[in-house]
Image 1 (tube, rainbow, N blue to C red):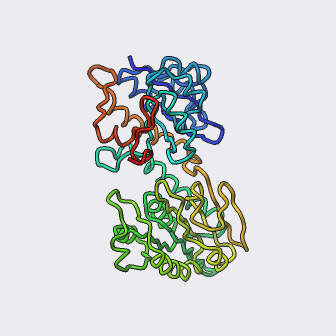
Image 2 (tube, helix red, strand yellow):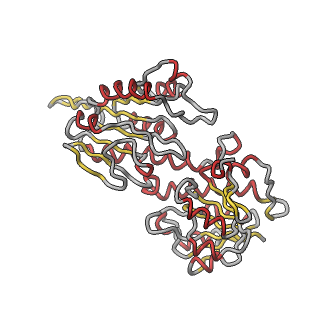
Image 3 (cartoon, one colour):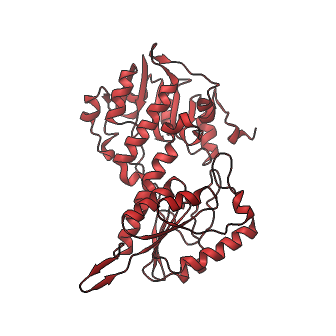
Length: 377
């Protein structure tokens, strides 16, 4: 029988790697699921709820990990958790592979087989395992809700006997999963929404959601997307033209949501100090790239600051602020991934190391870092 361990996350991480729904399905796959007591509380998954679906609730992380074949985590396991794993045990988590290289090498050296869910390939059969999309979707929604709250004015146009309340202008910078959800949410709340991205394929997506597309559409713009669907770094010349266009647009916006990230790189700088100073007092910027330094020059990661009357929020782990939903979706991502690794008939681990999903997410094996994005091969 496969034994799966789930431990509590650190104090800054309210999410958990399993839900009552996925416990039930893991048990049906033939697994024993051991969950550290209290691990799901911040996601409103009580020990009783998890136990009712077949989980064994144990005291402490060590008791959960003891003898486990697989450890499921949200964040990279602690050195103590890795030390408690038996040699060759599997770990599936958001490893943050580009952060803390010495820590990653130390984790690899423990002998566990590490899978980084952030490296999930963008292929059709892996869509249900795409943790970046599931979590970014919630972050985009929450960014607009939080931005609306900080704005302190109504978002939709309201016509009353006493006069008209104008609709708020909301600008979304970066139209990936988070940006698209932000556009949809801002539209539902009644804002006048515009959006920008350097990838030409996003123009139609933006317009289909009822928002205005804002970008310098030159020849470089038409080639600005990688085969994997990410934005390419743009030339200084293009960046200057785009910055001028954005500067003129941003002056009249009430709420700006920035979501631009390129994996493994610092966040691109989209909003300068001068742009912030041009905005109206009471305007709001919510910077979803704060964890990578921020898209706004004045963002302070993890804090909300006031700059000349403009509120700039740099939230860390915004998806975690809606932990019930975030944990439910993340747990389903992990379940779909484990179904690739488990033989349903034999109810045993059966890993095809040549599978694109396995190769794409495998970060460390046999004590070494093996992912080509991390080894330079």
